[in-house]
Amino acid sequence: MFSTVCLRPRPLFSARRDGRLRGVSKLPAAPLPPSLQGVPAAQLFPEVFARDPHHQGFARGGRSAAQDALGQIDPVTYGRDRSHLDGHVSRLSPYLRHGVLTLNEVRDAALAHAPKTAPSRVWKYVNELSWHDYFTRVYAEIGELVWQDLHPYQTGLPASAYARDLPADLSAAETGAACIDAWSRELQESGYLHNHVRMWLASYLVHHRRVWWQAGAAWFLTHLLDGDPASNNLNRQWVASTWRAYPSLWNRGNLTKYAGERYCAACPLAQGGCPFDATYAALSQRLFTAKKAAPGETGALDPARLQAVPWEGPPAPEALEHAVVWVHGDRLSPTHEALVSHPGRPAVFVWDDELLRRWAVSAKRQTFIHECVQELPVHVLRGEVAAEVERFARAHGVRAVATTPSPSPRFAATVAALEKAGLQVQVWPGPVFGASLTPLDLRVHADYWRQVSASAFGKAPAPPKAKRPRTRKAASAQAKGGA
Image 1 (tube, rainbow, N blue to C red):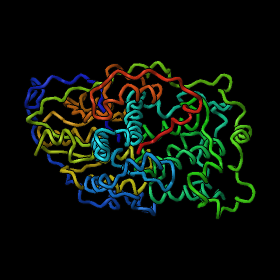
Image 2 (cartoon, one colour):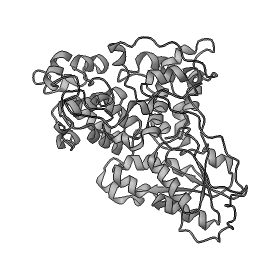
Image 3 (cartoon, helix red, strand yellow):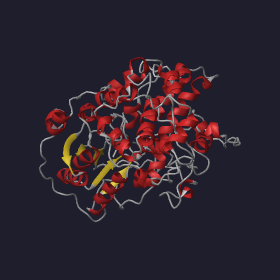
Image 4 (cartoon, rainbow, N blue to C red):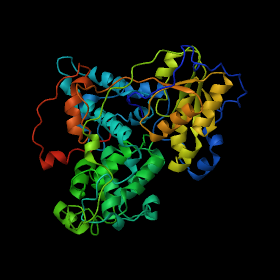
């Protein structure tokens, strides 16, 4: 369970101020196994490190590395050239994804680059940050539906027309297309892809190779240092057309506009056989039977579910005298709200073995997380998360656990298991990036942004501006993945 957003309050067990449940005495302490914090990631996960030769990604983990990267952002130039592969992107996304930095910290750093009288100079950068908040909120609302087609493919093809497995030549970087093979290598070696490249590669896989978007999403989750089911899956759905009115395509002209000739110059297909050397109309005619759903196809999401979503998180609870702190992968920072509110109290981080297996998390991702954990005052365990957190609490003789929120259904299941075991779980909310005067309309990012834009710039929430008519061209610009 990895991302942080303020979630709606959930009922908690009634507890006294000292952290013990009413009518329940403090538990006797039980021994704990030694902390795994000092054990190298390669020793913790030898099978993964033996299988994956790329042990270090493009970024180092931890708060210190995050602050160094934050100090180098250029949000003004970013607004002009972010779509170009050599543009001034910040590469902060792994730190945002794992809560090492908060959106508010990055937003405030961006605003510091603009005069107070002209915050619009960093408007695009702040707007891009809002996509992270938006996707996280959608994920918190729909949960595991994020892995299902929210709407049917708008390609005229049924879902059954799409293969389920990632093509072997793609993962081996042997498709013969220089751009595709270069991106495959970059993803697997560095754990990074420019946002534009993510869209191009996803479009190639789902539309040219006719492989369902879930296969590409799982591949990205394995390798991207910032991979999470919110931004990752919802962006893949946007490209596929299962969360958009029509599919996303690109052609050779679009590639050279933003990447230059770096790929085409050395591509064996450049002089003939390039699958992208065509007009958009020709590509659509070749790849799709129609730009609408095939007869009888349905999606998993009722759009009304996202129409009026409460945004208010729970108020900060009162710190408990006797509680342990549970740190999870969505808030790997010394500024963790529960850690700060319980100074000196025992804290635990648990490697979720089952989730790591399910996502086939690469060595470079495990290295990044491991480096983040090294900077935290935590006792490190591994196994089934609820069982290990419960064991940690009982070892310290308490029945109260303080933590931070996560949109993940896995987080909710863990909290439910802890409560069923008789533990009180206190959730300490993080800072709110985008406050609104009304429940959020999350059906489309543009409507969400109209509601929260004033707050996103550090101002008091304001009524949304009048909605402008949306054109087909404007709608096509709605695929973002973060700064």
